[in-house]
Image 1 (cartoon, one colour):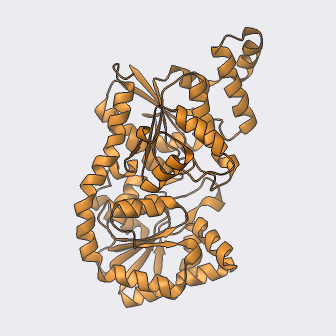
Image 2 (image 1 turned 30 degrees about the vertical axis):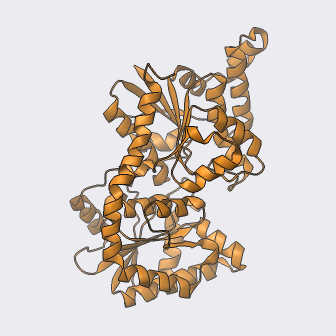
Image 3 (image 1 turned 180 degrees about the vertical axis):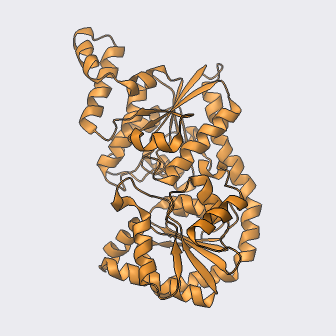
Length: 414
């Protein structure tokens, strides 16, 4: 029995994290039914209800940096037989996370876009700890399908870690260039695709039933799906010096224009639902919907990522600030105008030939948004066809991550 530990994500209330975890888990199980897979999570109380009884979880302490440091020290000292010191620390800090790491044949890190200094060095360091722990216990580590970099304050740590792991795959060429500039051997870095491209959507019948429960009829007007995030709002405010109400007014005005000009229903789809209220995308969606003059609907249900993908597939066009909501649209052949707060968005859109349909949160203005949405609406049939032509290659690239993981746990792997 081969043992794999999945680590690095935040929690299942972020449906993008859940999509990555579930996609890897189920694809790996389909390829290797002899694998015992654990998911490491900082929020097991949230995730146990979401993942259910079939998927085993352990608690990660990576967000408690002092505790994580002593975990690392315990693993290092105990493995190297510093008995007098190591045994004392081991009694205090040897827990199920170290135990699971020690028993693993492979650690698969799914930190998404967190191996960077963009969100602050403390966030980066918290995501470095599971990798450090694996290295301390001399385990094979696969940094899987991520957007990585840029680095500044933690540059030397990132260089050491990423040079020490077994394999790195990235989901865009921008990340590969960041790693080259960091001094990582580029031969160990492959460009693949996000694991969420492997996520199977809920059925059209289920999507229609869920939308009917939410009060949206799918047999009248076409639907413009919208995903918003406070990350884009903050980027806009920081760059423009505007207030929060100005961003809300901007988005409300643009969507009112679209509802009339394109004769569409506006549907807000939230891809991050917590865990705290301040991280729930439904709040910013409601604020925009309340400011709009035209009717719109905010989906309130706590839907699973496969159901969200099925719902988004009902849209004729999508305006998205959350990358995994955009992936749900793109992988369903739905044209997207992406609102970006990170290079990960540009990277994904580049790979699908949609690089002209990205607007940075810092650069948003009403005329530019309306012009881009009008262009996308006019070209939606052509872009839909283009997406469907490119998607098999993205699916193959996403599946390459599973093939690499299989190779890394095989007996003949060096």
